[in-house]
Figure (cartoon, one colour):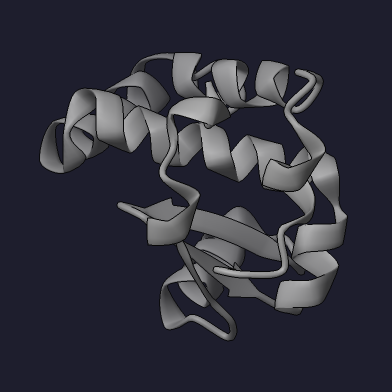
Length: 115
């Protein structure tokens, strides 16, 4: 799945107000949230995030989901899934959790740039 993502087009934003709002809502300390091709981080550094392969794969899966479904439509589908089944049982979160264990090429996971 992540192999379909154009890595060069992804950006990571630290100390994002969007991620901060998500962390507050979810009552967690650290969070990453994807909007389009940007990974928004709260209470973690870019370096810590990139070193955590499972977390990185999870968020790359969400980027691929945005690409596959289209930005607006993906957000609507994601919210609907969350309302219907809850965050944990949301089909898009299940898919992203499964992606954490996929074997991606190491250059995809460890690339210093463009992150």
